[in-house]
Image 1: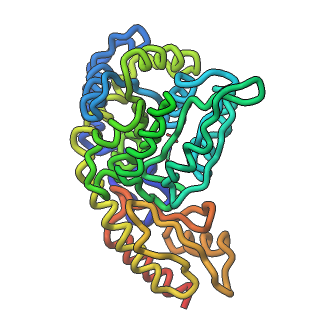
Image 2: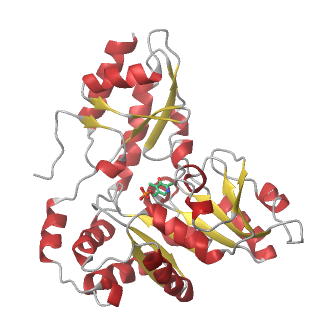
Image 3: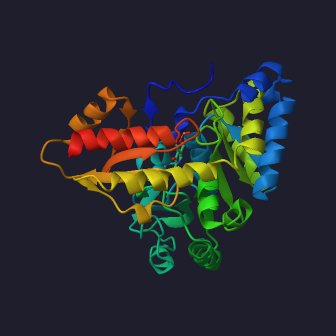
Length: 347
Ligand SMILES: *Cc1c(COP(=O)(O)O)cnc(C)c1O
């Protein structure tokens, strides 16, 4: 069975989505080859489809989003460089120091308005290299923004940062782990976002429901070098068409339904905000991530999460409070269950 276990409403992450029956079948029947030798036809097709959807020359299938981001940072930078990142970004906070561990660059974290960095501030932080100072070679943006409760970047904001980058000959990498959530929220096609960045990474393993994998897209020479980096990092996989087959279905059939996750997250936020102690503005839930504070005399956050869990509602602690994520395996009944459990615990 690939359906959800209805005894649990699992709001921890959209990464918990299991492959659909159609994916399982495609995986079983996938035509495969040796992808490190470059001849797994299913991986090649996935990469071709991904590059096409994003309007880029080429794509690279990678085991994780973290590896995709790491390859991008490494490919666009040299040692002694500085990389502009948003202060709460995944690249800066959630990748076990990969940016320094792998690329040996200095991250320059900038404050933002819920993930949108001010282009003027970005420009002020660009350094011209000297004997004292690093060279700024890359700007990383995140869309949608995980740690800012799934907030989205406007196309205008990304274009203005692009203008700054162009004036200084600097690259932009977009961490678009959930780019389809962002695209549904703003109505901006994924291609238009991708056009503002030199490279973009997005995940198949989240709301798109594939079991494993992410894609990095960009110019051909960047992807060629990325392929060498992927091997160096231990990410060269052999008959990986068995996984890419699920990824193809994710890309071709699962992107449309992401709008349901966004809608359900807003509905969940509106329900949760009505309970005493929940500190949340539902208007600020753009996509499928709901992060809220808890200010309640009876509960610390760990105690509250434990009480939820005992009642079949699973969520995670995060910076700034508690995180609920909607995805293919939570439905309106799960939202209603969460609402009832919040009533029981908080009123
Ligand atoms: C999930 C995620 C990633 C990649 O995570 P992996 O677990 O390495 O696949 C990167 N960026 C953001 C914003 C994410 O949410």
